[in-house]
Amino acid sequence: MFGPEDERNYIEYSMSINSNDMIEIEKKSVSMTEPTNHLWKYNEDKILKDIQEYVTGTYKSHYCGQEANYKDIQTIDLMAAKELAANFCQANILKYGSRYGSKDGRNKIDLLKVIHYSMLLLHFDGHYSRTDNGLTEFR
Image (tube, rainbow, N blue to C red; front, side, top):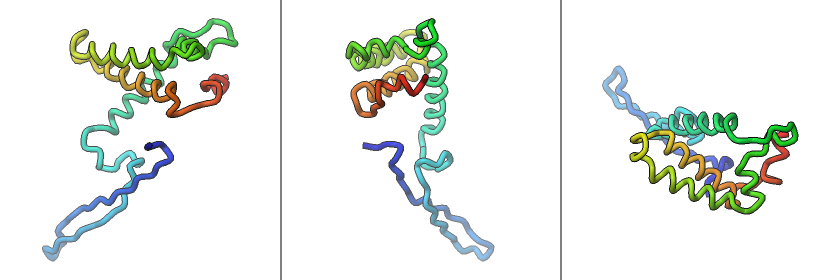
């Protein structure tokens, strides 16, 4: 239900004591899309930055075709053509979620993979869509 088009505004209050020992309250409208909104209590802004860096990095490491016409086609695109991508994403969410804490300890990369596969599942299950799965946008 929430998307990038949603603009959520909140009120932030700050208090200070002026030179006359009077309390001054400043009321300011803050948008959740502002990077320094002071409303994200649990480092969500840093986590989103890490996710963005991780996902961007995966575009350099996926198995793609060697010929020029196929350099942008990833394995998951082939799965999507056979309607297997959503199930693949869901299975990988379980895989990386269940191995977190077991293989390589509490490995941050496993959690980033869970989030990335969740994002892909949102796409392949039709919550966000692109014409021809976004393939022509990358050519």
